[in-house]
Length: 216
Image (cartoon, rainbow, N blue to C red):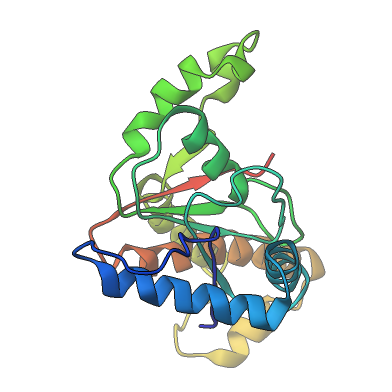
């Protein structure tokens, strides 16, 4: 996975007396490297955003207190939350992955900071949502576990098509069975529905809370 870091200009003063001097110096060195490469802060941020939005790399943008507003990359499908965000900042972060894009059914949210419990509060408190019925926002955010629970039913629906096939290992019988155009189209639809959920199972390999948000 390729990645880039987007930060604001650090404190450039010399002679730090803090315990974490080295880490600050590393940040300064990184900043100086970016300024040498891009010329100025605006160009640095602009080029990295354009590369992420329109190119194949970087695949991941790492940001701290950046790109919560004025950043719109519809293809962005995954948000990793690694620090505490609340109220409008949380809503702004969530909105980074709820844009419509071809082939994108959900935006995925991986919550390493255990803060998605704040979302209901944020939706209630944020003034930008005044005038909206809370029911309009229902089911916007969905636990991946809820979707995975549908997997067995989707699998059963898929195999129901082949019930008339007498012998399970008869590949030619399956081919003949799908010779009917309508039946084959039905098979493709059920297969697509199953495959939309199947990859979600592999996202549950660690214990962090994961959710999906429907693009708006």
